[in-house]
Length: 328
Image (cartoon, rainbow, N blue to C red):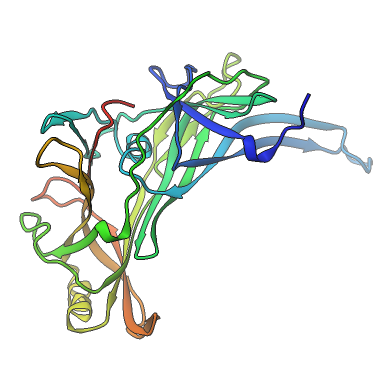
């Protein structure tokens, strides 16, 4: 029997029909990594007069998964279906698939959960109810990076991984595809381009929490519940007249509408639709940095915006992805 090597530990996932009911993990992700971690909670009891504990009682067990990798037009729809809202692709321009993600402001969102398999032919594990809790996208000229965390139910060890998984379309998002726009109205989204934006980061945090009822048939958490999310957008601009102008908006509590759009030079459709990843959001600036921070010698200012619900736009944020992925 060969040794279990770290380099051969593959990750495969499959979309669940019922959350927590494991399915075959038949999809292979090549730009999205999941790093497993076991979470195991116990109560340790030491009776009075005794130096050593007499009991260690296991209570709750689940998994955490660290998310990382370069963002890609195809695979990005997997975390977005889990952390934002479940979406169904529509077909346009013959072959292009359009995915739209618009989380609700006042009602619960239906999201996708996954079964994940990790390992090799030497030894492998699986876990059901994989759910993305936190998801971050960072756009700079040095690269487009995704990160975050997911949870799943406890690990099942000693499985045989699903054979012949299908690779999801990759198509990396390249920095030269990206533009940033900031406008004063939702109707004007995408109208005013920031020609000196150096970094934009979208951070979605604290999206869901696990539910732990007293149930002898449930070896791990049984369900999930939406919690108050923390959604922010960080924007780094040159502190010129345009960049410093947003200090006035911060002081007034104005809502600004930001569009972050990556558009490939490659067609996803037959004639008109290119690969695209677009994020629109309404935000109010809640923090401002020094106006003379250094970005490769350029004086920049960092704004942190809290994503807010806008009554005219009737949403807080919306994501749209165009690729050739017809279904998860």
